[in-house]
Length: 126
Image (cartoon, rainbow, N blue to C red; front, side, top):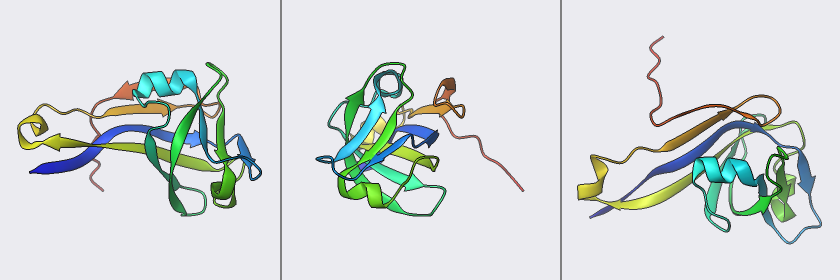
């Protein structure tokens, strides 16, 4: 059996552009793609923290170090500059791979600059 697990996440990145008249996709700072190990043209899910909207698209590479997160095409109706979003990539794994799989979690500041990375989500108890 194959299972789909979180492969990588860009946590609370800030949308810098929303380009309705663009072919489609989400343009992401190439440095963020590399650090998260997300490939160009890879399918991602985007969760808009600011308005609750969720949608899928694919990535394209923006200039390295630019901090760009540009929601393009029809998806531009779902996010605007200043919105906080989570960008998640998933992958399929065989049962034998599950025990060693660690997702790549990337955390940023308000300018989409990496502050730290993790490979596990800390459990918070209220």
